[in-house]
Length: 143
Length: 410
Ligand SMILES: Cc1ncc(COP(=O)(O)O)c(C=O)c1O
Image 1 (tube, each protein chain N blue to C red):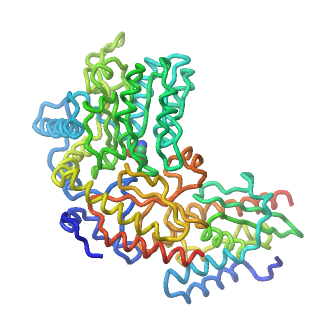
Image 2: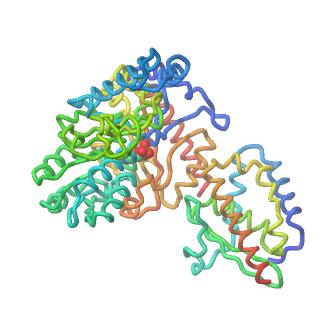
Image 3: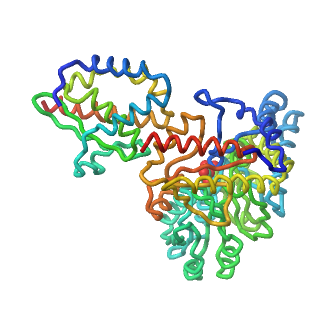
C-alpha cells in the first residue's frame, strides 16, 4: 500500500494508459479489469456507515490512517463502479491528507470518463471523490 | 429480421425529430418510453406557435390574443375529455402531472373526508407517486394504509384484496399498468368490488393512458390521473379526472387567482369547476400542446399502436429469454409494452452504462417503486419500454448490445 510517487504522477500514468485506447470498449475493459484487481473489502465495512449516497449501485469506502498517510479500501456491487472505486483508490490511497485534499483529479475529464458516464453516474463518481476528500480532511483535523 | 408489420413505422419515425440524432456516434435507440415518450413535430410546433402568435393569459383578457389562447386551452380540455370518455368537460382538471393529480386528491379529498380509523388501499406495484401522498395524509388523519400483495410475477392477489375491503375502506388507489413491470391490473374488478363496499377508487393511468382505450364512464372509476409527457405530449402538464359530484364536494387545493368567484377580505367564494382546482396562471403552452399529442395518437390509432407494440414486446421477450441467466420480471399475459429483466450476476447499472455507450437508452434501477423491488427481492431491473416509433431492428440492436455487454462484464 506504500505509495512513493505524487498523485499527479499516477494521474499522468492513467492518462497515458487511456490515450492508447481506441474504442470505448477498451476503456471499459480497463475499468472492469481495475475492478477485478481491487483487494476485497471486509464485509464488516459493507454497512450504511461506509456507504456512499448518490449512487444507483451500492458503493462502500473505508479509510484509515497509518504513519501520517491515508489508505482507502472499497467495493461496489456493480462491476464498472467497482472499477472506478479501484481507480480512485489507486490514485489517492497512501498519500498525506493534504495531498488528497489538494488533488485536482484533472485526469477524470482528460480521459473522458465524465463524458462516458451519463450525468447521473458521474454524480456517483463525484460523491465518491467527495467522501474520500472528506475522510482525508477528518484525518487532517485529528492529526 | 425484416419488418413484416402492416404499419408504417418509418413514416411515424419521420414525425419525431429527436429520432434523427446519434448518441456516442451511434443512432439513438430510445427504449425509455415508460419514463417519458418523445414528441412528434406537431407537439413541438404547437408550443412554438403559441409563443410566436397568440401568447396571452387566459380566461380573463378581453382581447383577441386572450380569446385565441383561451379557445386553444379549452379545446385541449375537450380533447382530453374525449380521450378518456369523460361525461363532462369540467371533470377534466389540468395539473402539472400525475404526481400533482394524486397529491391533489389525497390532500383536497383526504382533508375533507378522511377520519381517524379509516382505511386506504394501494398495491405493492405502486409508483412512489401513489404511495407517498397517501402516507402524508394518513399520518395527518390517523388513517391506515393497506397494501394488496402480489405473486412472484407481479399479479395482484385479488383474494387478499377482497378480504381487505370493509366499511372502513374509503379509497382504493391503484396503478392501471405498472411502470416497473408493465403488468396491467384488473381495475374493472377492483372498481366494482370497492364500490360494493362504498369505497372510492382512483386509477393511476400514467402508464396506461397512452396504450389502452380509456373510458372512465365504463370503468366507473372515481378519479383517473395521467401525465402529458407519457402520451407524446409535453412535460409539466397532467390531468386529473374526477366525477363531477366528487370534485364539487371537494375543497380547493391551492388558493389564488382563477379559482375564485369573488374575493373580499371577509370571505371568498370559489369559482366553479374546473377552475376551482386551477389556481393561478396555468401552464398554457403545454396544455395547448397536449392536444396535438392526442391527435397524433388518434390518427395512428391506439389499436394499431397496441398491435405494433405487442409485436415488439413478443419479439423482444422471445429474444431476451435466450440469454443465459436472464429473467423477465412480470412475465404475464396482460401487459403494456414494457419488458423488465434481471440477469444473474450482472448489476443493472453496469448494463445501462454499456448500453448507453452503444446508443441505447433503457432505464435501470428501482423505477420509483422501491417497495415492489424489495418484495421481489431485487435491487432493481433493466427496463426496455416501447412506443409507436420503435422497430424490430432496434430490438435486434438491443439484443446484440446486451450480449456484448454481458461478455464484457463476465
Ligand atoms: C405509474 C406511474 N405513476 C406515477 C408516475 C409519476 O408521473 P409524473 O412524474 O409525470 O408526475 C409515473 C411516472 O413515472 C408512473 O409511471
